[in-house]
Image (cartoon, rainbow, N blue to C red; front, side):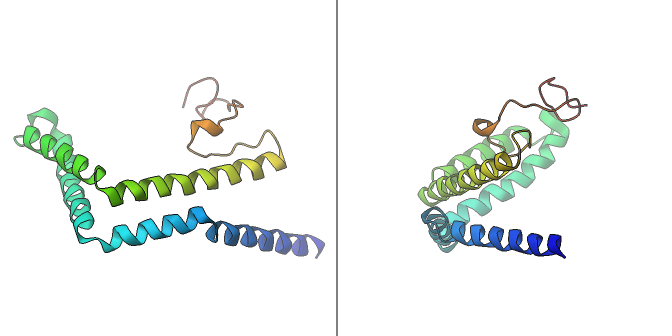
Length: 146
């Protein structure tokens, strides 16, 4: 019974932390950028163009440079990616997305570290790597991934 009450309290605190993140300026900026990006037809056109080019690119990659449309598809995917990346709303969204991800990574590291310094927290960000690499199979300090 005591463990159940403790678990409920921990889950309530986690929910409160999630609400704090959602109410943060970083999350608000992310939502604003997402809304602007989804609402802009020109940005959406660039994203759709890149997505369709990406599907062609994946098909061409199966055959490599021997595919008859290899050069054309490679050129077009680079052009559409560049066009999409240079779109101001896409760039703003990516920055806001990275800021939110960094906040979540920082929280994960703090929570994991508060439990134990040996807890591995996957953040996907090398800045947060602690150097406590795991053994074989984890791609840790030995460098293998077998």
